[in-house]
Image (cartoon, rainbow, N blue to C red; front, side):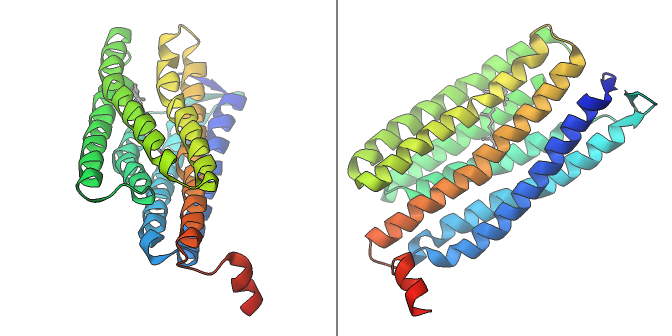
Amino acid sequence: MPTLTLGQYDLVYNALSFTIATMGAAFVFFLLARNTVAYKYQRVMVIAAIIVGIATYHYVRMFSSWSAAFVNSGGTYTPTNEIFNEAYRYADWLLTVPLLLVELVAVLSITGERRKGVIIRLVVAAVLMIVLGYPGEVTLDVGTRLLWGTLSTIPFIYIVYVLWRDLGVVMARESPEVRVLLRNLRLLLLASWGVYPIAYLLPLLNIDPAMALVGRQVGYSIADVVAKPAYGLLIYAIARIKSEEEQAIAPVGALVATD
Ligand code: RET
């Protein structure tokens, strides 16, 4: 672990703290919002809540790990004997990335056998992507990082390709209103998932190790907020509109008016 300036230490400290608050708030929101979508989409909201619930736990652990990994030695933060534990992040992704994919497929109108096939392929690819990325994340050796990073990129490209293609097919079948949301979802997925490999590359860019560490932690945290709570909100908006379109629930205005 490198020595950090006060500003560098605080930036990660605050990013982790902000993320705990965001994930925790999203957990409560998704659980409460469950009752405002049709029964068919309620499990989508439960999955969204589980994802941010898991992330809340991991961010609490990362926050403690970060606090324990450095000590304020007047003017700088120097590393202690406790190493900042990157495994929390990978354990989190291992659980949440497959769930994010299941959440997406559950809100789309993909049915029957096709749905099962898509889920299995995406989940296997997601697990491979994360498991292959981990050895590279925890090494100090540039070659090893590059090797595992490259291997991990293969399933990553596969996932992005399948999502892009299938979302395109599904979009064509949906109403104009849902179509706009799906287009935004596609962009949000690309913008947030694309941050991870870039953040991972930072230690390879010949920049100061403290900057690389801080950039990576802040980058991963921001990407996680977009990929879990913001993504969940968009999925919720889709579930809401589809519920209304399928006439399963009264429009929001009607609910308010009869209360
Ligand atoms: C790694 C290793 C380097 C190569 C690639 C990676 C991709 C990681 C991704 C993670 C996505 C995480 C999400 C979390 C949600 O909260 C493992 C950094 C391609 C895409 C969506």
